[in-house]
Amino acid sequence: MDKIKNFDTYLEEYGQRIIDFLPSLIGALLLFIVGIWIIRIINGLVRKLFIKKDYDPTLENFIASLINWGLKIILFVLVVSQLGVESASLVAIIGAAGLAIGLALQGSLANFAGGVLILLLKPFKLGDFIKAQGIDGTVKEISIFTTKLTTPGNQLVIIPNGKLSNENIINYTSEGIRKEMLGFGISYDSDIKKTRDILLGLAMEQELVFKMEDKMPIVVVTELADSSVNLQLRYWTKNEDFWNTRFYTLEEGKMRLEAAGISIPFPQRDVHLYTQEKVNLQ
Image 1: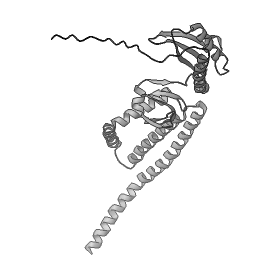
Image 2 (image 1 turned 60 degrees about the horizontal axis):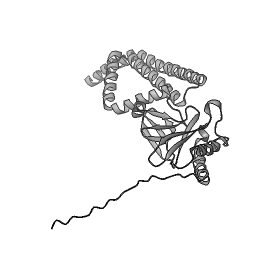
Image 3 (image 1 turned 45 degrees about the horizontal axis):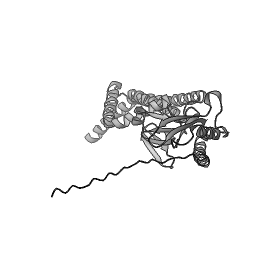
Image 4 (image 1 turned 30 degrees about the horizontal axis):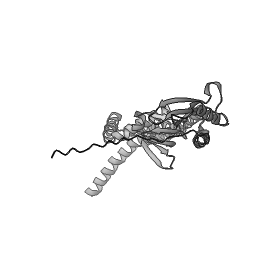
């Protein structure tokens, strides 16, 4: 009988606690359902705003994810607080956990910050040909922590965004056009004027080379070197025509100079040998 009384007492006590807890539980459940519904509406509005503003896709995904997780964390705190847990204690626990994780992931956080800067400042975009960290390549992917480049040899290079955002970046394609400066060395006995006319004619006859007033091809003498007189052919092309124009101009320029009897010397050095007679002191 005593056991039955104790069971009835426990059942009544905990039953009353459950009844008292039900309003908080129902309130937390309703808060969770309404919160998820509001978060979905906000996420939809953010997506529509991005579509109107036409931001970078990577930046859109990052900001959308950040807003989504931030709202869910706030909702979690509100729901737990509705269940009776003190919000101050919960925030303190989350803050301490965040600090511990931050100290353990300093390198990753540096890459994260670098990724945010790259996405906001946009020093380059997908498809740009850049030089960074001593690597030349086409930007294949920009993520929060790393940037992926594809080299001209079709090699994939992954660069941490922390280093990338703190070093110099050369963007070869951001302006839409490029200026090339091809060097040609001729011997001191060759005719500079004739060389200039040949190279300039080669550039002027190419349709892909610009002939605008401020972007006309020119040939200049850049150096009187040890073994050659060095000239540069300078011209402008579109990004997509740059490499084909360069390869053709180099090959055709050498052939035309040689056909005109203009010598293209290779590095050489004169060496003088002196002999010294041995003196017999005996």
